[in-house]
Each structure stands twice: as C-alpha cells, then as structure tokens.
Image 1 (cartoon, rainbow, N blue to C red):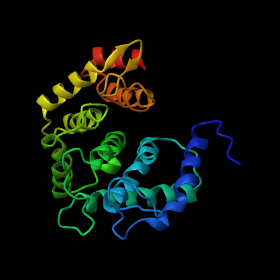
Image 2: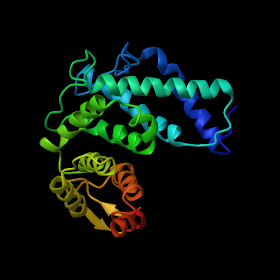
Image 3: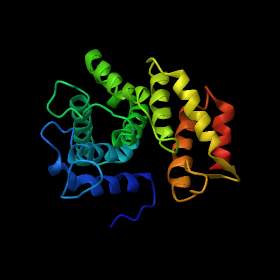
Image 4: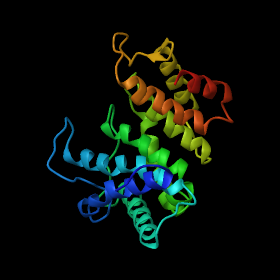
Length: 238
C-alpha cells in the first residue's frame, strides 16, 4: 500500500499509475491511445495528447534526484526516459510516420506543447541534451509553429508563453513580440484578489487555478531571475 508520506512515495505512485500505459504506445512511441474515446478533434491529435499528458508526471520525475528506488524501479525510470526520447524524436520529425503533424490555428496540439516544454525545461539533460543537432532543430521548428498561428485569447496564451520561455532558456530564437503580447493578454484577464476571467469577462471557473495559477507558477519558477517582479506577483496571486 502506498501511504504517500514523502516524495519517494509520490514517485512510486506515479510509476504505478502509468505502468499499464506502456502496452498502448505506438511503435515509434510518439502516440499513446489507451482506448476508444472521442473528442472534438481526431484520433491523431488525441494520440499526441496521450503522449504529452504523461510528461506532466515524467518531467518532474526525471528532474528529481536522490530517490530511494530499487534497482528494478531505477530500470523502469530509464525505460520511461527512452520512451519519451523516442516519442519526442519521432513526433517532431516531419519525415517520420508518427510525426505529430503541423500546428494549425487554435489547434489542440498547442495545449500539449506546455507539457512538452515544461518537461524539457525541468529535465534538460534527459529531454533536450540527449538529442542530435538535427533532432533539436526539428523540435524547435515544430514548437515554433505556435508563434505563427492564432491562439485563443484566454488561458491558451500560456502555452505560447511557455514555448518562448523554453526558447529563451535554451538559447533558441524566442518571439519576443509574441511573448509580450501574450503576457499583456493574460494580465488583461486579471480581476483582482487572485481571480482571472478566462478570455470572456463573464467566465470565472475552475480554469483559474487549473490554468492561470498553475501555468503562472511555472512561468514564475523558470523566469524568477530574468523577470523577478512579475514572477513574485504571480506567486502572490496564486
């Protein structure tokens, strides 16, 4: 029984939760579609979403140090690293059969970029440094498509913000104009006392903690030195 008393317990719980998913990855590991489900977008974006969402757990796991894992658990973590590396490598390669596809205006794949870049920033050694220069260029080109497309004027702007934050941290060409515009848009949604509206002034719902504060704290973590004042503001609001 996992009692969740410490960080090791939380890491083991993550491994328990995602272990059954291994059998559902595509051959190239870029797609994960565990069952027959439906959304307003097709199966290919849904399979890319499946791959990306697991990174919200695996990125922090790879970044963590000094876990008291058994040799078997350490081996499993290494296996997950290989799965993620293969998936990112193939998903961003336009010549590979499991290419995630070009990003379009208001694309669901924009949502998933947040998990990809956050995991890369947390675990740079395992999810960025490991790639060849050509593979890094493919990753950059795939992510950079978000800077050339229309993004909903609501919490979605955080996805593009985080992409450009990653570009800054990794010495890649960030779109500074987009970054400023997106931060201004997020700020225009602020209502005071920790509350945002989600694009529509009448829409104040669960996306305030789930998106605005969640992504805001990620921004504050990675931009603390470069943008200390706004990072402090985002922490206070949260």
